[in-house]
Image 1 (spheres, rainbow, N blue to C red):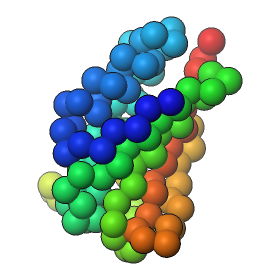
Image 2: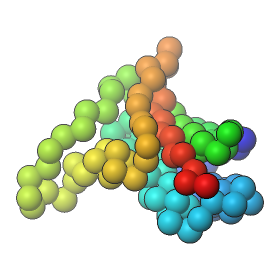
Image 3: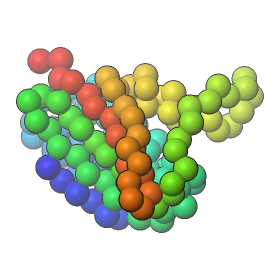
Image 4: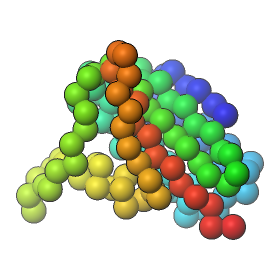
Length: 120
């Protein structure tokens, strides 16, 4: 289990990568989990207005759970981007890279999460 409260995308990714590597996850799963984490952190910055979202993750029974909490009450809405849109694909990526994802409203803000099940 790890909690990071840093505005650094690099430090959050490195902590996740290290934990997954120590737990024996493969390179593809690590890459996908890192990319999904990046999307949630960037969403917290861009749409949640939170400069240092709280990142928490754990690996239990071969399931990785990652959460990113921000201070915005606005719930994310997956959208269908236009062919030429530069934004709007983040939650589609998260959905495609993970086994489950969702949003839990909090007393202050929200927590967006995803889970990945190990193939082994």
